[in-house]
Every structure is written in C-alpha cells, then in structure tokens.
Image (cartoon, rainbow, N blue to C red; front, side):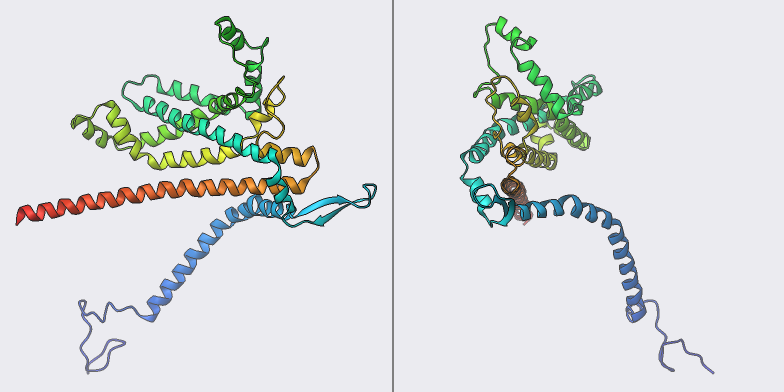
Length: 351
C-alpha cells in the first residue's frame, strides 16, 4: 500500500525541492503577508499619530484660524456711536494690506535684508566651518563653544545688548569709533538695516557653523586623502571636494535662513525703541501685522498681512528647493553623459 503527501494526487510524483510548483505561493502565504503588512501599518500609524496630532494642533489649526479671521472686519454701526459688529468682508483685508504703502515698503526692507544677510550668513558660517575642519585648526572645541554661545542668548536680550552698543554717549564702541575719526549713526535710515543684519549675524552665525562643521566631520576622510595624494591643495580640497559633499546641509541652511529672514521681527522691534531710530513700527511685514493687531485692534488686517507673508515664505521655499533639485539633476545628467563617453571610448579601444 502506497501513501501520498497531502495536496498531491495519488500516483502523481512528489514535488522535489527544485520543483517550481513547490516554490509557488499559496493562499495561506498571502494571508500571512497581508496580516504582517497590516500589523506594520498599524504600528506605523500608532507611532505617527502623536506627531500628526501635534502638527494639526500647532500648525493647521492656527493657519486655518488666521485665514478665517482675515475674511472678517469689525465695524461700528451708525455714526460710530453704536456697537461694534463683525461682518464678512471677503478679500477686503487683503486688498487693504496690499494697497497700504507701509506694508509694501516692508517687503522692500526685507529684500534688502535678505540681500545683505543671507550671503554673509551662509558664506561666513561655511568659511568658519572649513577653517575649523582644516588640519591647521587648533583648540577646535573652544572656538566651537565661543562661536555658538551668542546663539544661547535670547533674541530680545541680544537686541538689547546691541542697542546699548549702538547708542551714543553710552556705547564704548561708538566712543572708540569717534575717537578714531569714524562717525556712524547706527539708528539712521542708512545705518538701521546694517545694524539689524549685524545683530542677526551675531546670533545665528555660530549655530549654522556647527551644522556645517558636523556635516564636514561626516565626510569620508579617504576621499580627502585621495585628493591630497592627487596634488590638490587646501583651497582646492575645501571648495572642490568638501563643499560639494555637504551640499545637502548647505541647501537646508539656505532654506531655513530664507524662512527666518522673512520672519524678521525681534531685532527691529527693539531698535524701534532707540533714540531717533529710523526703524518704524511698520518697518517689516511682521511689525506691520503686530501694529495692526495690538495698536489698531484690526485683527482682520493683521491676519491678512500674516497670510500674505506666509504665502511669500512658502513661495520662496519652493523656489529654493526647486533650484537645488534642478542643479542636482543637471549634475546627475552630466555625470551619466561622462560615464557613457568613457564606456564608448573603452569599447572603441578594445575593438
């Protein structure tokens, strides 16, 4: 009497280990995979739920409320002696903000601030990081801490310190400059913007330098040694090897710097309190929104100005990411073309 394996017909040959039918997935295997996939998705959803809940609470809800608030205005009935009522105004607040010269001039100030601040910030932080990463650097931990310490000072305190250093008859810096025959009014219309840029650089230069230095420390040292063996000097190694290898960090810092520049508020707000300062209460779009909300009690106009500023930040962020992605794609295409040329040349030489 012969016995057969389960799942085979009597008289049919048993499936061997090399038989393709033995490796064919069954319905049971599919159910096991589906159950495993469901457990993985459930675990991922459970771990991501706190993040999305916090994101909705602190980002989506405030933005949605700001958009909703920007569509309403408060008006008084009668000749101004009646009660205040909230009415739907549509896009009137946006038109009022865009039609206000003070709001438009705030974007001109931001443009000038970005032109000065962003190159100095990224270039300075990158230069300091490259210096600390060089073989000639000494006492690296000390200089890292010394450069990072200003970032630990709150922005308001930093601005107050520099207002003191900018004020004549109080600042030893101004007294030393005047003794040397250098006269410069940090609160004048021509000096206000460089003064704000200087404060922001003092606060954030060390922070971005630490990011670049950490990225440089992750560069494979064998690549740098190979460049040195090939005869590359310190400058060539820094700008042709190191900087391209940390391009992702440079793009990230550039993106955050652009967003932070559009949020300029604390430094000019403190400088606005300086004696004879050219910084007005509507000097930047953020200050314009702050003044509209808390000095004029026009919350609809303030919300509309904030939404317009947020849209500008989103647009500039998109432009920065697209430009960086486009350049990366061009480099990949050029690299692939070079590889194809080398392959064609090698085939032609072999034939």
